[in-house]
Length: 389
Picture 1 (cartoon, rainbow, N blue to C red):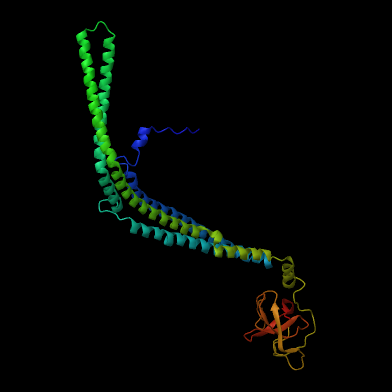
Picture 2 (picture 1 turned 30 degrees about the vertical axis):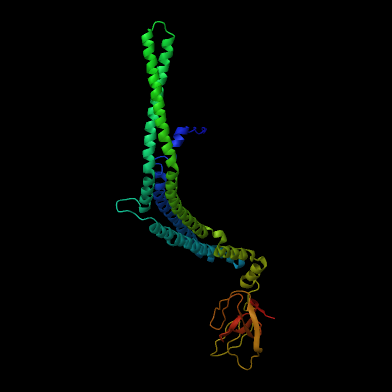
């Protein structure tokens, strides 16, 4: 349980005042404290940069570890693409956090170091020139005031001592008047001592008041000179605060990934990929790739054709004039529904979404002939494409 703070006696509070001799040292020391604060700020965010770098490394290692396993997983279609998107997003996030690390070190850290070097000028034998200038200014302004305070303390002490002496004499005189055992001569002597003590007290009081009046007259000048030096110190501190504010804002800008466009793009694309998971498309792809929709070589009678290699289940690249085929003049534009990798030299390979020309209709085994933009011709399964209107 915490206790209430102890009240500071007025005398102690006065001794802590800026105006008291030597108490300007806290303001002078502020320069050295600011220099050390810059070192601490750089060290602090260099450590944060290491955290960002380590996180980036962990993301990259995680993605690299799982990529081959995901690529060969039993998932397929849009579901596989969604899983793969998590890994590619991790690589992009790794790059982003690596850039944050570089910004904290090379941009923010170097900026503070450069400003620190330009702002604080070290002396040959320790300390800073700025601190020495303020120390000299305050000491020069406070020296006459300190002398007057010392003189005032001496005058006050003398007056208080005289008051105590007078009080003692008064007490003795009061005691002697009420005591018949003390002789008249002795009582007169005690009275004279009390009168002398009173005169001394008045004298010390007058001297004390005179010194206090002198100190009071000098106070405005002292305050003006001290405030002048203090204002210079405040201006230097204002510049330091302003710079460090901008430095902190720069660090915040680098760390605030919530407003980073690259970060938004990563999670936006990941969300779109997840929303694009389609049961119908995946099942259709499986049907056409591994199910009943696959092209196949149904048994049929084949004539012997000497010295002419014919592709089983598909029309040959070159046919004699006796075999009929439907050739399209100009071709029909189609778009691939799925990825297809040609198994033989006379087959086309394409990616889902790719467009090319169909130049021959589907044969009785489900194959068409197409031509890609580069002039490459070949066969492909008819059910892997759709005709563009």
